[in-house]
Image (cartoon, rainbow, N blue to C red; front, side, top):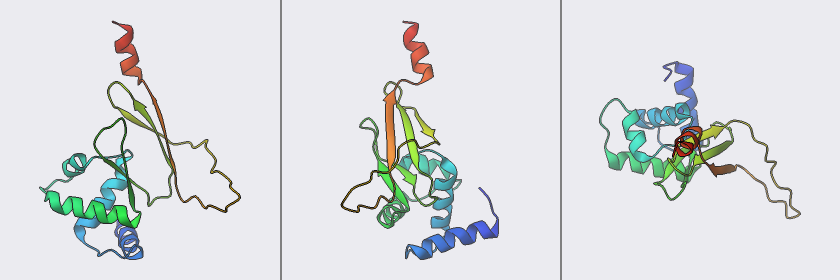
Length: 143
């Protein structure tokens, strides 16, 4: 994680724009989401912090971020809730292994937003592809 003051200013502005109090914990949490690159569970978020953090504090902040649109909650294959940032403007698409649950991110979006007569304006989307990761394919071909 960068300690560049301009980077910290970016997160402070992001919190201000979403009418959220600026705290050190919230800035650290936003940095964690930014650097993750993949959806994270609450447990994985807790493990990313060097110091022990209060679970209730984490959940309250995750809820506040979700309500404000900074992150979104998703479920893959009935797993626990996973959270992913929505503040960078990057569109997220995922490959999910049906066997081991591994998630890979796809950086290219080939899905254009739908055009409707109603004038519906899309602000974000995500696409999920389910199948078998390379490791599980190899494992299954050996049996």
